[in-house]
Image (cartoon, rainbow, N blue to C red):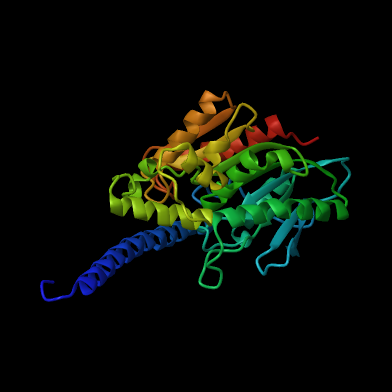
Length: 340
């Protein structure tokens, strides 16, 4: 640069700094799409394969119940839900069980959970599968936070539709898998106080619940260097729908990320929680599930944690443990929201 003027030198320095910053930002952006691509693809196993031989399915007909599809809860194209009601409506009140679909916040549909919704309905519950606006090229503004708000805003519509059909809802449970598990935890922990009816319990599998970089070893976000810092901010900021500015590990950071981090809402009043995670999960952090487990233990929250010791995100190598988790769902419902 010895042949350049002072102004030219300063201009080159600014350009280099800008290029380095852009490079770090693009590196972080790659992490965002690596995450959502892997997370979305991982959902296929649970939606297409039943490793338990139909134990948690039912031969659906009019004697079991009726399903009403694509009911609206808002003006968005994705603001639809399916409602399953048990045959007859002779009881004075019913419990509602909501199941939120998987898909990495970018894919999936409520129809993929028809089997578990029918099974739960056959047990005497009104059940609902709810869609939400997915993060995509068409909806780059969508985020985990905006999706969680859509789920929150859907509940009065779901309950009103059940009432219209003659099913009075006086309590509910919420559940989901993967991305749906994350959204279920947020509703159960963050939004329970403003739910139209009391939330009695939550059950979920492999849903991310916390956003500390040191937990996200599966993406190298725990390295503590400039690149991993940018990547973490890009990924968590995309999920939160806001720019993450605070220093990691500070109260200010926790405040910025709290709206999508279920673990930060756990207290002594948190609802009973049933969960299952894979020890070798490379899609969402196993370490984050351990943080959630500690929070539940520290606050004396009734819970059961099923660890699939040989599995990743699909829990595919521990069918026995996964079966125990599924059977525990019935036990939790019988305990915390029994059919009246």
